[in-house]
Structure formats: C-alpha cells, structure tokens
Amino acid sequence: MSDTIKLITPVDGSVYAERPVASAAEIDKAVAEARSAQAAWAATPLSERCDAVLAAVAALEAMNDEIVPELAWQMGRPVRYGGEKGGTRERADYMVKIAEEALAPRHHTDRPGFTRYVKPEPLGVVLIIAPWNYPFMTAINTIVPALIAGNTVILKHAAQTLLVGERLAKAFEIAGVPKGVFRNIVLNHGQTEQLLASGRIDHINFTGSVGGGRAIEKAAAGTFASLGLELGGKDPSYVREDADVAFAIEGMGDGAFFNAGQCCCGVERVYVHEKHYDQVVEGLVAFASNYKLGNPLDEATTLGPMAQARFAAHVREQTAEALRKGAKALVDPKLFPEDREGTAYLMPQVLVDVDHQMSVMREESFGPVVGVMKVRSDEEAIALMNDSPYGLTASIWTSDEEAAISIGDRVETGTVFMNRCDYLDPALVWTGVKETGKGAALSELGYLSLTRPKSYHLRTKT
Image 1 (cartoon, one colour):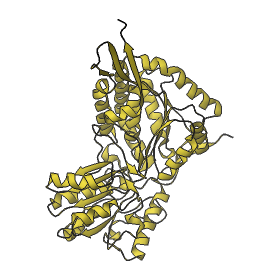
Image 2 (cartoon, one colour; image 1 turned 180 degrees about the vertical axis):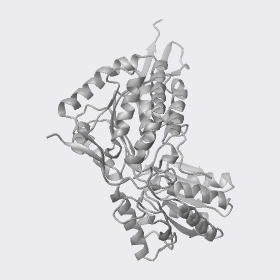
Image 3 (cartoon, helix red, strand yellow; image 1 turned 90 degrees about the vertical axis):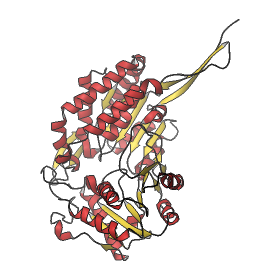
C-alpha cells in the first residue's frame, strides 16, 4: 500500500484531503522532464514567458470563488478575507514589469575594441518547498521570477495546503506552459531529502522553520545547489514618544492577530515608550477583544482556527510559561468561548509584565499572542529589538523619518518599516538575517538569486 499525505482540517479535525506520495519513478520522471524542458523554455522569448505567467495568475483569479473556502478548510483563514489574489497579482505584475531590465545583460563600453558584458542565465531546475500560512503568495514569490528567468519549477507544497499545489498546477496548465516547465509533486520528508541530495536540483527555495532549513542544508550538502531560506521570525514593533498612538495600535493589532498570528512578518513583540505604554496596552487589548473567533466558513468570523491543534498548543504553553513567570494576560477569555483546549481554536491575547527570560518574547510564537514591554529610550528599544536569534522585519512607529532610518540602521533585520508592518513590497528585496535565513526574493535582486552571471569578453580582431 502506497504512503499517503493526509490533510487534517483545523475546522473540525477531519481528513479534508488525502493524496498518495509520488513513486520513485514519478519523481525521476518529473525531474527528467523539468531538465529536458528547461533549455527550450529559456530560449522562449521573455515576453512569452511573462505572458504565460500572467495567464496562469489570471487562471488562479478565475478559480478564486472555489479557492477561498478551500483555504478556510485547509489552514483556517476566514472566508470573509477573500483569499490571496490581490497580493498574488501585485507581486506577479511587478516582477513582469521589471523583468526586461532585471534580466538584461550589463554592458561595459569603456574599452574600445572589445565587447564586454555580463549576462544573467537561468540556474536550471528550481525546487520550491512552499509553506501553508500564505500558500499562494509565498509560492508565487519564487515561482514567478524563476519561470520568467527561464528556469523550470518543481513545487512541493506543504501537507497542510495540498490543494494549493494542485490549483497552481491547473493554472499553469490552463496558461499553456509546455510540459515539464511547471510540476506540482507530493512528497514526504524522506523523499524530499533524497531529492535534495540527488544533485539533480539547481536551486532550492524553502519557507518554514529553522529546523526545516537546517535539514535542507544538510540534505543538499555537497550538491552545490544554491539556497533561498526564509525561516523563523520574532518581529518587533517600537512605538516612539512621537508616534501617532491610535494609528500605531490599529496597525500593530492587525499585524499581530490577522490570520491567527500566522504571518511570517507578523508583530510578535511590542516595545512602547513609557509615555504611551498604558494607552497602547489598553488599545491592543480592545483591538484583540473585538475579534470573533469561530468557524472560518462563517462570514461573521474574523479570527479562524490556527492551522493545526499542535500549533495552538505551542502558543498556549508559551503563554502559560509567561504567566508562571509573572506575566499578566489582559484579554478576557469569556469573550472567546470557542477557544477550547486541545483544538486549533485559540483566542488572541495581550501579555504585560513580560521580559526576555520568557519564551514568548524570544522564540517564535506564530500565533495570536503579543507581549508588550515599556521602554524609556531608543537605546533601550534597539537593544531589546536585537535581543533575538531572528531578523525578518521590524516596525518603528514615529513621526520622525530620520529617527526611523537611524534606528533602522542599528536594528538587525531584513526590512525596516515606518508606520506600517506585516507587508511585503515586491519592489523591495525580501530577505532576513541571523536564524531567519538567507537569500533574496522579489525585486531585481530576486532575479539575481535565480540566475547565474555569465561573462562575455569579446575582442575585435584588428
């Protein structure tokens, strides 16, 4: 009997979908077809590759009425939010817009008698191991530039969002991409590690846990495949003395609790100048208390379950540990009767009297809980923001742009936000530092990470 991947829905704990893992022969065929198709795809005019990508995005948009409830069943996001088509379209459109310039040869004309340029060439076969939390947008971050750059793509989607890989495969089929250019495949962990170690993959992109990133590096060791890794995060917010406090509360509240806190760059810890501490705490508690936790298929629900019961259990334990060490939880549990121990349904929570001896302030939560600490100065805030093994984004709430830049220069992070958070701008490179990983996605730098430079030094014979 063949091995299968079961998708357990967080809505009611039932098996929502089940798929057999690929056989060894199917894996070999997928890689061989990707390798065989790559040269012809790279030789296809850039405009045609861009058109094919946009056609696939349009095909996804046409499926959106079916995709939205599927996402609710798969990972718990409420249907009222309408899926991910806006962000998917924004990112794809931008990468198409800059493709010609980003992929153009860089000519050097300062030496008469020579033609000299550096040309970006596709890497070959790209394996994307995509996550479940924003399963379309995070996959598109690499799928789109990889294909436009002339690579072929094999997608291995998260078990929690099996149907997303199938939707993407269908979209590219509708778009008419040639056989072998894009392939969705179902693999277990062992098969994934074997494929990584095979030397048949040229670039690996992974979004997930730090442990998963380490396992991928280990599996791919010695193959010389390039890697793009977006791993854990513990993104901070800092509310300065000169901040618009009401605006900051609204932004940070959404950044902390939207999607049940399951956002790569969601706000997980907040540092507030002592002048505004009480107001910010009161505002965040009110913001969290207004959520309606429930079945994500109900239009009235604003906060769905976490993707798995074990994820909710992790956040519950982090919160309990903080309370044992002296923290206080301020959101009233009576407002959230749907929060039941042992399920994926978890209420939002705001913690005070927290410190960096507590896991909830240093280790990734990836759930709807945020700790708030009082600070007296920029120096104290910077030190606390940097007291983390992670570095994806940091948000600074202030009316002083120069101060935001100065603070941002000292914060160990991939992206600095001022007066916003939890947003991925496709014009700016998406990257992290420390245990958040390495590599570059989106922007022109995203194209560079999916190509290799090839130099041409041509001497005119005289």
